[in-house]
Length: 286
Image 1: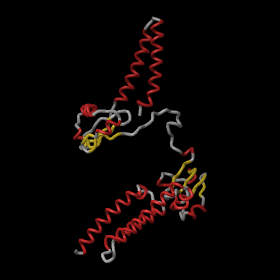
Image 2: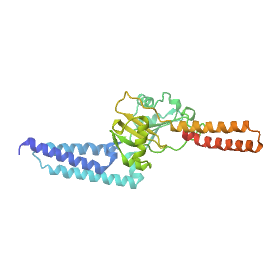
Image 3: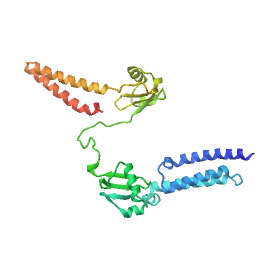
Image 4: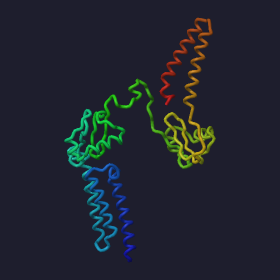
């Protein structure tokens, strides 16, 4: 067999084995790596190259070495899951770099991190003053997480005492011009509903590059033709406006009648409708 054919076959075999081993090791192997996982990734790649190109040696020994490395990696991950002490020993522990707006120089030296590097990480997180930082912690993965002081944190609805509705997962119901029935069924909608919504905006499924339905049943579409403009859904705004109009009409009826019983009834209905509007307003103004 010519060498180039043998190398091609071994390379395909190495790719297949490497893919299977990586799938077995899990998603962490291709995301944030610990020190041991980093070493494992390099070693597995080197062994795969050895299997592909070393035509003189017995290539199956490389496969054996690869399997041993994967087995050791799985054992280490199992021990990490079962023991915090093993996790701390292998992955390390978080290190506080800033506390109460003060740099901890000893911890910076421990992590071999210069002040310039830390300031650069802070700028990436839109933090330009160390004094604005309550805590900055370097995780075992090497990422730096920052907690701003309370007065420098962005406002949230909770700070303002505003009640907002819970947000659920948005479902993608159209992709690449094709309807996806499973996400539609997940949110309790039918293909007929989808086609009706598309007719309202004058497009077909084939014209839609991406279509999504939010937790409130509103359809948002992105068309293949970027020059075409599609109006944003207005159902919630229209419903809120209608409810406010009804409340205003009831108040007008209350003011225009001289019958005490009717006036009292209208006033009570107006208060009840106002309470409903205030309760639904967080849902209808998102």
